Amino acid sequence: MEASNLVFIVVAEVAALLTLLCLFLLFKNNALRKLVQRLKERIEQLLNDLRLARKQPASSVEPKMSYRQFLELQLEMTHAHHRSLRPEQDIVLDIDPGVPSSRRCAALRHAILSIEIEATAAKDENTPNWSQIDRKYEQLFNFQEEYAAQQPASSSAEVAEVERLTDELKAAKKRVDSLEKFRSLYLDLEARWQGCQNSAKNQYDELSGIIASIDNAEQSQSLRNALSDYHAIYAGASTLISEQVVSGRAGADIRSATDSLDEIRQLKVLASDQHRIISELQRQLVSSVSDAPDGAALEELTLQLDKQIRFVKEAETCIQLMENELNMAHEEIESLKLRQSAIPQLKSELKELRDSVENYETQIYTLRASNQRLNRDMKELKNQAPEPGSEPALESGPESGPESGESHKLKKKLLEMEAKYAALEEKFLDLKLGS
Image (cartoon, rainbow, N blue to C red; front, side, top):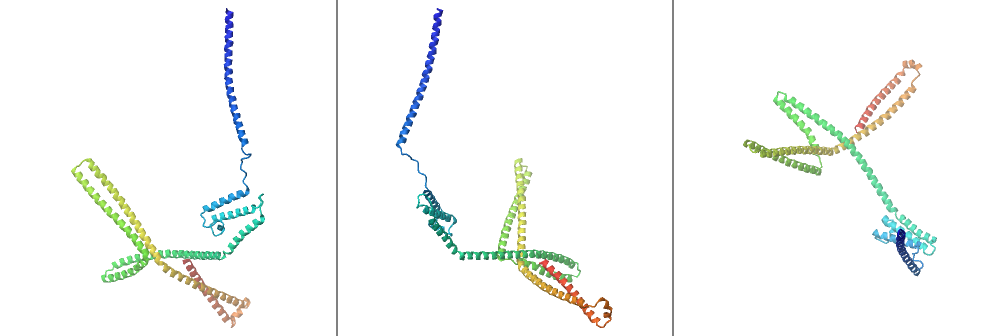
């Protein structure tokens, strides 16, 4: 009984193992079937592709572009670029050097590509026809030479224009240098004139004080009248200088000054209104304090009063700044007017100084020539003088007197001329430094 059970267990285990093995083999069989099916489909697709490939032409690849086709493509691109430049004429005519450089470059490239196409069109192996290339390029070169031969007149006119502009520039630089010299002279004269005015005012004040201390009323009044007339004449010179201005510029300055004054007047009116408002607020504050109102109204009035006071202070500061700027502008305008009116006088003074310098140079040249002549005469007299050993005999002789007198006269004249030359040279240097 136990043996039969054991056999049954072994048989059951073997059956189960075989069942599992059959299931595994069935699964592998299905997978292999699917793989075989896919391979069959791939083989059928390859066969179909092979049949289609056999039915198509032997070669469907486009042939390689030839050199001529490449040149024609480039020529068409050059035409398109030239059309994008909005030309006024054909591309063949734009090779003229007078046209803009962009259109001329396109025309030159078109000419070169056309020559290359014509030179290689006769032969299939793309070998160049050098005789045709030489002829075409020679025509191109001849056109450039003919155009250059037609240009000398215009180029000479341009050269003349450049020379004229250069001369005008040099003349303008000279005028600028002259104006700079006039400016330095004007500033110097302006400083001197201001110093003279200050000195004259001080002297006038001192003389007025002295006249006031005189007891004689009639004499004091006559001196005061004479001094006033003198001061009026001196002050009239300043008035005359300040009034010599160009009418147009003076009108413009007056208009600008009038506008600024009107604006300042408006600000002053606004400031007076603010003062009136402040006075009214102060009055309300005093009345409110006397009537003992509530704290909110009193605080509001106090804030309004502080605000108006700050505004008035700011307005007064702005008005003061504007007045200062206006005064500075007036002073600058007056100084410019004086400078403008002093230009003719400076020109005349400069001309006189130049004439004086030329005269002094002539005198110095003459004195130098006279000095050289006198030096030569002195050397000749020294050469004619006797030896030292025979000097006593000559001094006692009758002929020694006239020769020694002549020598003394020449020496004296030479010393005078040297002193005069030194004085003139010093004056000449002063004039040079002053100018």
